[in-house]
Length: 295
Image 1 (cartoon, rainbow, N blue to C red):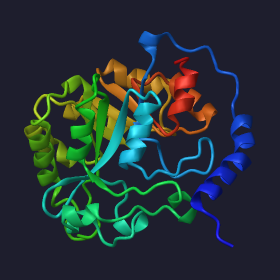
Image 2 (tube, rainbow, N blue to C red; image 1 turned 90 degrees about the vertical axis):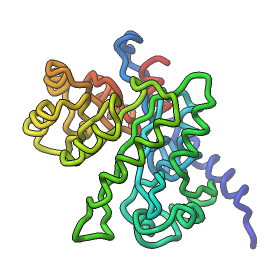
Image 3 (cartoon, rainbow, N blue to C red; image 1 turned 180 degrees about the horizontal axis):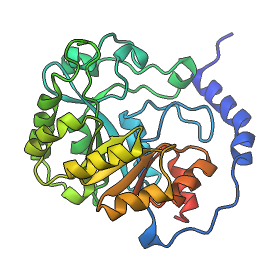
């Protein structure tokens, strides 16, 4: 018997709706608007997820980014890599086979070939989208037409795992390509943040992106990496959700650093991140965060 994709989608909605409703709880008293963190869609609408909320859209795909902004996010975080022909591509994972019907790495293929690939999240998720990787320029062209420009966090995925001997060889070229592209757009610097996990990349980023805020990602050993961020005089730190605390936010603020954290899908987790008082949360669940903020 043949079942259409539309029938399967409608059946799923009927089955899952009670679970989605059951997950909703009473909202806490929200912070005053001038004390609220920015709501930044993490890779757009987050990652593939069956519930809370259901998300079939690939991270950093065009549909995922548009959906986060349509839901009311202040901005989006996007994952940026460099193609073989020096075009900035939006793609999250290290290898193409993990999320597309391609093979290898973004760094090893021309942009035209990458844009022909189809995202693959599993047969069920793929019933709901027909997404392909896009260029960063395509995103900027689209968003620049909006009456209010959104906040943009560029998460630079500089490591090329297909080049085991020199995995960061193209990091300076990525910085230069981003600098050239951003010069084409009149984006306010205070609505931009360029993120890296590699302290060694900061010199090239400063040269390529003068006046644009830079952030250093902290994934472990908070105290030592906070000292590194202070020494490097970046504008922000990006802290993993399980490392962030109110005390650590206060430490960073005392050092003149903005604080960004990322993750959070369940309402309890999102509320905990809000309670840590960061300046922005790259959140996996935009509707829940907006609800908790009373927006």
